[in-house]
Image 1: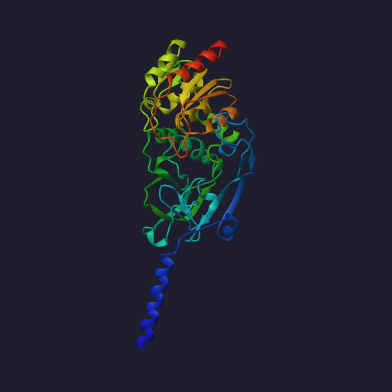
Image 2: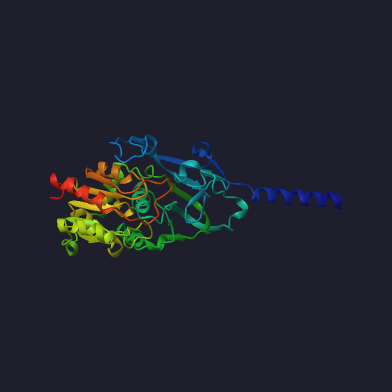
Length: 367
């Protein structure tokens, strides 16, 4: 009898260990319908653009993307883990459609196992998951995370699950949107909670391809006249001197070519979010090195001229965003594009910039 009992105990321990060691399964949301309530918001949207002029190959740009449908899911006893907002359904599933386009989980570069998760904390009430991977980046925060609130406009909830708010723009934008700070759960990398009900909005776009309704939402919520910053110039040069990476070693020399044409230089790091909005809204010509600061094109007036200066990193995001916004877009390639590059500081050849200025000046581009 004792032998039998010991055998049963051993089997139970083995089963518990096996369950705890299981990898969370990534499956289609269709397979999870019995565990959740699914509410569709938008049908898929097909966008059509004039191709990015600097595309290094046919496959390196996507001029006709289809944005997936948007939706909300309500998950009884749903769990959410980490600053990236991984929503766990029925304690063992991740919905493929609720993972970021570039998530390492999708690419199997990172694996979530049950036994690696911390002890779950139970939260009473309904928790909305707003965070996602990419939350520290200005572009993804503005164009992907904040518009999820539009999907939630008719939804009641007790708490809102966000990443650790490390940036001034996160605090300012949430305040402008009227988000109640008392309802915020700021998550860290090891935060793990289970709510009575979890509400998770889908992604609002295919990352780097922004639908018109998102643009309209951001304009409606954030564009307000601010007399204190009306004196900002109509020709602006956006600096990367204070950027964390991809700085321009000879930026002063580059700016010296534009300054005689009436350009003023701005470090966006020195401006409040509301000041950045007004800066881009007033500008008629914008010259900027590629970077997340160009997200502010959302607030530009139709017809404004944009010059995007590229270094090693190939990215068509702002070319296509400009087309959605009705902006007149131009771009300059200053070095060879590198696969997986884009973080190196470089020296930009002055002759390339001067040649562009000479050609465009002749046709009145800067007037």
